[in-house]
Image (tube, rainbow, N blue to C red; front, side, top):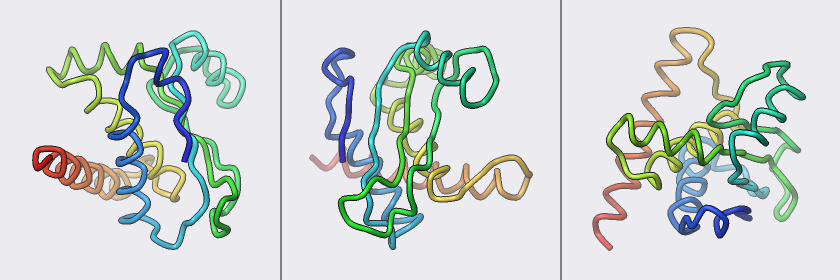
Length: 144
């Protein structure tokens, strides 16, 4: 697993990797492919959102499927997070930045695993799983 941009934003990669691993273990344990996490800013994520979703605005997280993830070492997908948006959201929620970035990574990784939130039932399922994963990550971090 690769995390790109962490040094630029001064974010520890360990909790970010833990978020991806925990999500894959719970949501898609058959996936052995690689997930790349890219930390970027609003300008770059806006460009990606416009290019791939035809939405000319910054967003907090984007996911890009690459392959089926069934082969070790092969790419499964990319999760791109705007740290600038995550920072604003963390302030609004009164949460540490790393927890908000973890939340976005869990959300993006769940999308790679086939989860969605367009319908009410799917949204409830996805958000419930996100909440449980974040609680487990926080508990794990508290025990260190």
